[in-house]
Length: 226
Image (cartoon, rainbow, N blue to C red; front, side):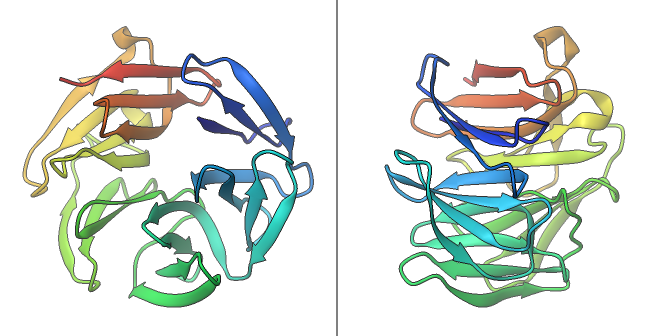
C-alpha cells in the first residue's frame, strides 16, 4: 500500500498489508497529493503546487519521469491509461507506455481536490464545493449526477466495487456513502461510530472486498464490505 503524507512531511509512505511501514520516499519540493500504482515497481503521483505527474520508482525513491500537463488533484489507472483531472475543467488520459497525453472529457467541473475513479465503462468524479458525485461514460456523456447534502456533503475520495457501486467519502457529515451503480439510491455505510473522523480518501479492493478509508488526521482504517 502507498499513502501520501500531504502535510509537513511531503512524502510517500509504503506499507505492507499489515500496515507496517516499509519505506519512506521524500518529495519535499513538490507536495505530493494523489497516487496510483503503474506496476509493482512504479507509481504515479500528482502534486499540489506543480502541474506535472511524477513517475516514481518505489524501490529507489527516484523520479523516473515527468508527465507534463495542467494536472491537479485526483488520478486513477485503467489498464495502460492514467485518467487525470485537469485544472481547465476537463479529464485527460495518459498512455503510460509512452506518456502521451490525450483529451478525454470536456466541461467537467474540477477543483484541486477533485478525485476520480473508473468502473468497467464509466468515470466518476467528485466536486467538494458543489457537493456532487458525477458519473460519465467513457465517451464523455454524463450518465448521472448525485446531489443530496443530507447524504453527501463535501465529497473527496471516490472508488467502486466489482458491481460498479460507488463509494464516496462525505467529509462534511463525517461518513462514507454507497451510491448504487445507476446513481438513483444511496446509503451511509460508515459513520463516526465506526471510528472515522473527517474521511478523505477511499479505495476498494475488489479481490478482498475491503474498503480502505483514510482521514484528515492521518488515520487509516480497513473495513470488510459484505
